[in-house]
Image 1 (cartoon, rainbow, N blue to C red):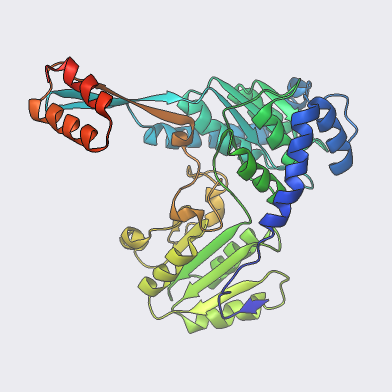
Image 2 (image 1 turned 45 degrees about the vertical axis):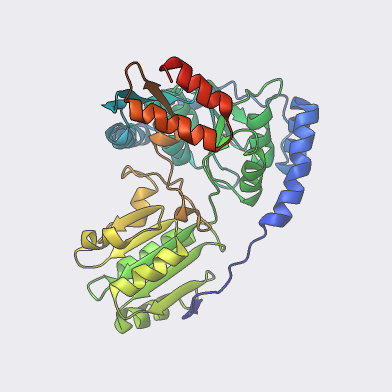
Length: 394
């Protein structure tokens, strides 16, 4: 189905999901493992004796040599990306003040790997590799128990995951946040998932860190008349595989592209928004307002437009398919949605590091000390002023 106008408001059932998830979190906090087993039977229709997967080695050995080689090769690429952007300790000296920042990894991280009808081992790569590059000491993972994908087990072993939990939905997030007899309490939980998973992350963010709210999938394509229509259609259908709630927009300067896309996609179940624009610059302005998860600049010399892109999770340049970012290019597929790209980006090594700042004032500039005392007194903090003054003869 094609629409030539962008919606003024997109549907959001988040508030309704919050009410449901609050009850799930309450149960997990009160009853621990017992609640998890009851919820898995009720929600995932799985009767479990334990939420811990104890056959990781056996399952991991079942993957084909071809798939193992593919995972290993992608693993190297993602490690290279995050090693390249990893921050380094830095410092300086000004006005007699030695200062700097040291980066320390988060100690314990939980990764949620969505599942259900399909398995998404790529998510464990996307979340686990930046955590490992950051130096996280304890990585845990959870995935719905209906059928544990051997590839998830292979990646878990490669990452050194401490435990893999057979847990789905909001109950997995609650267990990570508050701990149970079997599930380790973590400092931060990351990973995409359905609306209930995201609602749970939102609620537990009062007590632990989260990466953000991810989902449903969003794609904005900006195309000029040099773009290949067959590529555009494939890219749109690729993201539509995530479900009917996927938000897909094509902004193009070409009427011919619009006509051909409409002919091809009119009968699809997904809604595609196809809008004519006067220029690439106008399209980027609209895209910045949408703040999409994925942005594709399928235009001539796309790099020259990067400076005016201000809100997007990840950008594909030229004929690069957005789908390659979902798997192997280096940037993450765990990306902000629902306009969160206005204030944060996709998951990187930075999400697993904490900057600790320090200062050493042995022989500071006298005017700097006096200025601090003046400001402290202005705010009514006499002992702040005295504490500073006593150390430096003021």
